[in-house]
Length: 136
Image (tube, rainbow, N blue to C red; front, side, top):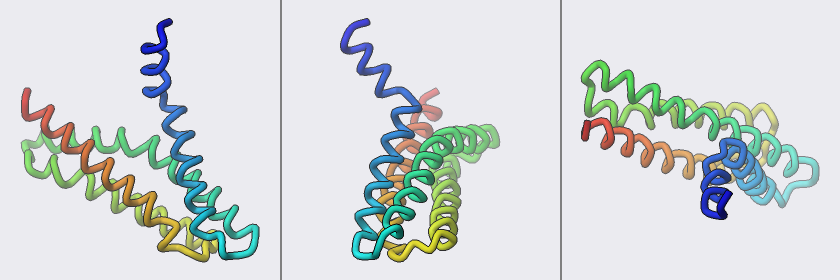
């Protein structure tokens, strides 16, 4: 296996994406809550890491399914805007609910970065799906 194909294989790995999301956003949550006594930052990090990994795993498939259904119903403009709005609204509710339940002290700071990244990804991926479908 060449270095290029190995790199592509690793970069396309779901496990790598989920693991990176867990580590990156879990670390962010620990940092965002660093002013509070342990174990609060650690709990926030574990909650956010788990949520980010799960959201990463589910978001792509949900965007694809919603887009496909809207195109099947000839809702062309809706297929551009509705999938990211629906997926991100659900993600935001899950993030807020889970962190409230976990008692995360810096709720807004903890979810701001992960939600922003997820929202940006959802919008770009939905646009790519929409553009690809329109070109058919």
